Image (cartoon, rainbow, N blue to C red; front, side, top):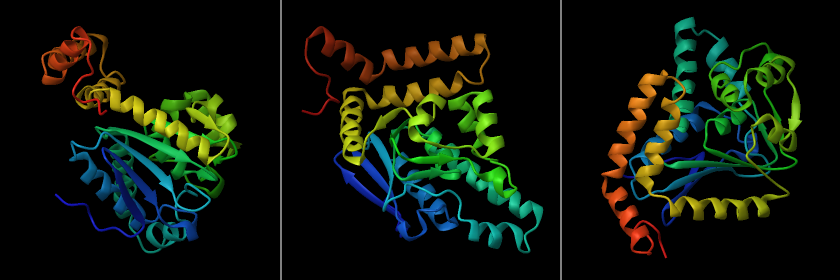
Length: 267
């Protein structure tokens, strides 16, 4: 399977790490239909790449993502569209955010300038968020008369219900420095150079971990959100059995006992 041909999403690969660039700097990387479709196609492709250990998502230009493309909102959602068509279009966005959340690889978002509305929601669906301290953030949907429909669950998962209500119901604008306290930013940096240094540390850490174990751990964390206690104990037991008896598990234990690096660690 070859990489899809794209225009507003660019793919770069460095050994076992992929970078996806949002490439609409003239529109502050707003999430047009084209951009979302290309991101979806690229993520679907990367999910099949067992040689890719992780993915970074970034924005070209001065801004990570200004949120939804409001011109597209008017054309696609309000002018001559039936309710069912709009529901399907919104559901497409929901499936995209779920793809971000469900990627087998570690997915890191590096934010600068601004991460607004759907752009902030997209980052919140990822595993790790790095942001420059002056990055502007907000969930502006209610200020223009709509709901943060498909991103709400990912914001709440990070902030908790109380903070999510404050942010969503007041159009609260804040910086990434405040976003750390809300749970929306994991690593705060002074500038992009510092962000790239932190990213390299994350990449090095991911490369020390077995890729299959990382993918299974991500599934375990998601299962913990919806399984009851009994089902979760069983699921966790099955996940442990599968991992400890896998080739990775056998190699990991053997390498520890033999005081050497496991075979997935690159020199």
